[in-house]
Image 1 (cartoon, rainbow, N blue to C red):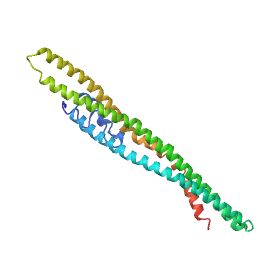
Image 2 (image 1 turned 30 degrees about the vertical axis):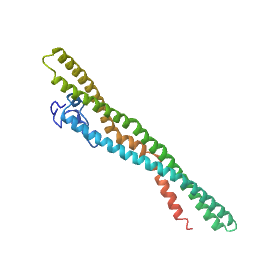
Image 3 (image 1 turned 90 degrees about the vertical axis):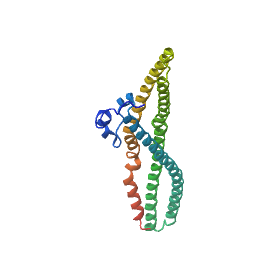
Image 4 (image 1 turned 180 degrees about the horizontal axis):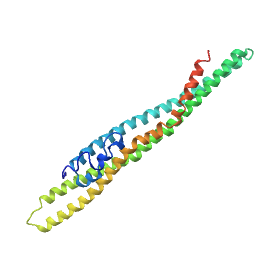
Length: 238
């Protein structure tokens, strides 16, 4: 149900907030009230982005879960290997050079093992759990509102059609249809504004949300420690 093209593409709320998303222009909530073609076009673009975002987040969460499960097995194998190295060092108690080298190797392995334990733990809590929460929280809310919006939109189109074809010979019926149309138009406006607001919120906050749970985790903060540990292993000379 389009009622004009709304304001110029560079004007209005949508144009002024374009840079805040870092990608696509936001939905101008004033266009929601007129159900303008610009609103429908921009809404379709944002809906496609939400679908794409959900698909990619699901892949990240699934892959992270698999990495954590395999990583836990790796940590256990590393712990067993470290214990064997320590036992081997004990065999050379009469040869201090070999024993000390093996014990340094063991200590370095322990640091690497500790780092990986932190990595997998943080991947589970800061990445897997946080992204899963985002999927089942904000994105699910937008998906549910999408269903409601399109349902009300169809009801509005149907009400417009019925009102336009109301028999002039039955003024009471025509008045009832006109009243129903007004009620549905009000419902549509409220639903459209609510839907547009939540889509804008996801578009604005998705990048910040992901960075807060990925870039600032101990996984990245301890990356230098991991490099130092692996370098130490390489330089043990064994």
